[in-house]
Image 1 (cartoon, rainbow, N blue to C red):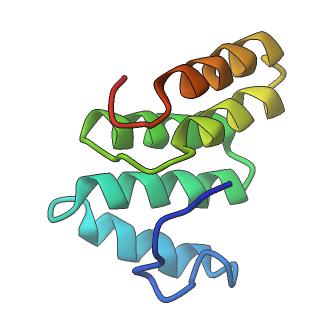
Image 2 (image 1 turned 90 degrees about the vertical axis):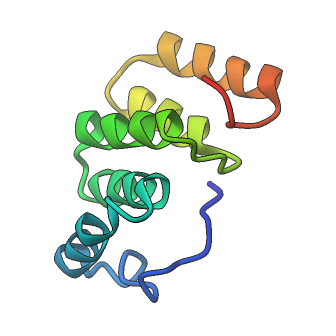
Length: 102
């Protein structure tokens, strides 16, 4: 799945989740879209799909326009056993062509 540039220096990829989470929690006020998206990625990597999905939706609501963000949400739903919900999100993403609007 697509991800934006790594402002945390690769902490998520290196599985330094606690450090990455502290970094993005501190960033929420200054750049909420980036922070919420990456907090979602951290929760996803930890296997906390419901929490991850909440962060991804927050990122969309505050204006994150990352290509593929709905794919992340669909993946959360699929892992949680909601194949129908995942499919609807994937179709919506294809229809919109971007993640700039809900």
